[in-house]
Structure formats: structure tokens, C-alpha cells
Length: 320
Image (cartoon, rainbow, N blue to C red; front, top):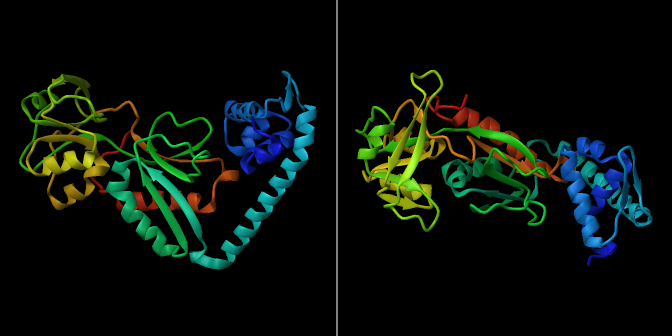
């Protein structure tokens, strides 16, 4: 069981903020979180300590004796953190364009890293040469606070309730193939070698049902197609390489094919159609609430939004 002395600075600052706000709802508004997320964090801290910190009622929130003993230390941590943040902001304001420094820890799914994040980070660091970036590419969901990560780029329509999600890049999943292939409708895929992203363990001969949808403004609605993939892999880069080599039709987010389309090495083999996926249709930037987020994470998000808007191909479809 944890002791008050073993609580980290984030936990102590949250306690101080909730005590000062007088309610979970007000603290949540100040932190940019939901009330449920703040409540869960406090319950987690209470679970670590084995003692309640607040007496809850429908109309009020009061500190317990343990909470009163701990809140003084928590306020000192909060005040020190605020002073440090003010000092950093002041130094950055004096530093001009090259104001960011330290280490920024970023994680992303491999397709995002391979498609645009690597070159984008090089350009961003050219503006901030004192900033060091640690990038981890993984499909695994990363707990930002527990794993000390500042920013995660994920495809999701259900971000965790205790993070701040910023929509970064809308996209469509499309059918890409080597030049020369143009299909009239999704049913034509049944006669093609299809290259499918799938978790380990799926066999190429397994039947797969895909629900294709017309782009907004197009005639028709949706079509279901039964396929037996010729190749399954857990890496989109490999599937697109196979498609470039004439190995079949690969289904991938359009941002993964930007460079191949520009070079003429791939084409949209099923124009006007896209494949909705359960994870959603937007790359989201996930961070901790602003009080716990480094300035470099916010700066990178703002820069990426501008950079991607300027560099995304004009013909790339965007979700409506």
C-alpha cells in the first residue's frame, strides 16, 4: 500500500486542484477533463493510500482528516509546478522561434510514423534544435501518465476519458494497387488478389466480409463484399510494397499512400469508395490535461495541424 510520501507530483497536484475547486466538476472544467475522469483518478489515489481523501455528498465535497493532512503538501507541489511552468513560459518567450528544449516523448502507431511523422519531426526539430524527441512506434495502447509519454498519435473515435484529444488528420481507407487497375465497384474485388491488414493468427484463406461505402456526393450507398485475402500481414507498409510490386490490392488509410500516389507507383483502384473502420476516420493527438502537458507537446500538435493541412495532397479525400 502506498504512503503519502510515495505519491507522485501529478497525484498531489490533482488533489490540490480538486480541494481548491471544491468539486470534481469544477476541477474537471479547469483541467479539460470529464468529471468521471477526475473522480476515477481520485479514487485511484485513495485506493493506493487505503484511505478516503474526500467526503462526498450530492451538494458538497469536503476533505477527510487524511485529506486535510495531505493537502498542505499537495498545495506546495502545485505551487512549485505552477512557478516552474511560469518560468519556462517566460524563458520561451525570450527565446524567440528556437524556444523549445528538453525531451519530448512521443508514441504513434507504425502507419502514422512511417507515412508522415518521421519527416515531420525532422522539420519540427529544425525549428527547435534544442528539443530532443523520443519516438516509439507501437500498436499497443500506451498509458501516457504511467509510462511518462507526452503525446500519442492514434486512430480512435473513443479516446480515453482522462486525456485531451485533438483531431489531427481525417482520412479514408481506400483500395490501392499498381497503375493500370481500375475497378467499377467493390464487388469486383472478389476477383482480385486482396492484401489485408490483420492481426497475427488470421489465415489468408479465411473469408472476410468488408462493408464498402460510397463517398459523400456519390451515387449509391454501401456494398458488402466477401473476400478470401491472398496475403494478410500486420504491417501496412509491407502490404503497400506488395501492391506496388503488382501483388494485388491493398486496403490502407489514404495518408499511407500519399508518397506512392505522388510518384505514380500506386493508384486508387476503387475511386469513389472507402472502407469505414471501427477505430474511426481521424488520427487524433492524445495528451494529458494542459496542466500536466509540456509546452513542446502542444507546440508539436499545432505545428502538425498546419503542416499536414499544407502538405496533404489536394486530391486526397476527407471525411465529411
